[in-house]
Length: 256
Image (cartoon, rainbow, N blue to C red; front, side, top):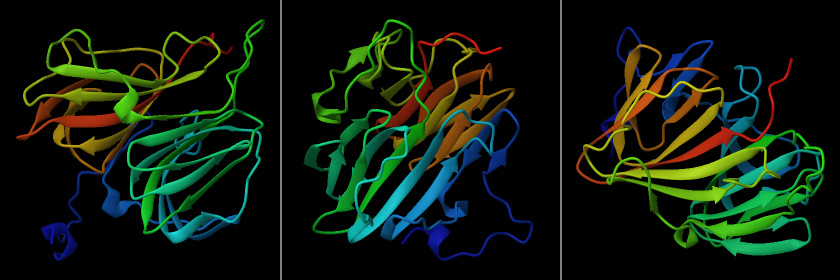
């Protein structure tokens, strides 16, 4: 059992949580569950939303065996569902697939989605946002994929692998989802400062994240939101490989 499961918080409530107007670091133990209409036997832990300043919403779905949506849902948004553990039956429009850990689905805006744990409890990352169309470009249809099928490409440093799940060099997409993996001691070669927002979920390992002018320790299960233009850099620590799932808004002009 993890010591965090047995010990009360310190008398001054010490933890690693930090929420600012420009970024947030959120360990899982402080993110309370929500329950939503259209879901049964499922808890939704919202990581970020427009209420925080994000241009998307992200949550972790914790579903009991058989739990999840009670039927297909159509809300006009585009959705991304990534299975963290367990097995889930996912519907994307008229397509249905059973996904294990690492499986994912993109649901095009205006389509319907559903997700249900199969055989045991399951957890999934859920990202949703309004789709921004681009003149002359046909939106991408819904599709499925798996982390194991995404090539590991090394960029900038030999110890950092990049897996594109959706969006790279596809102008029909207004968001990218990638998995970045780091060998111990590997780091970004420079501090990034860019217009894109990020939603980051730590899949494995641990590391130090520079946000603004401060370093934050992050572990598997943590969530980080990064607003536009926040200086950022990552340094992998620990004994094994570190990996995180990363949302990024892309391919659209600025809004005035």
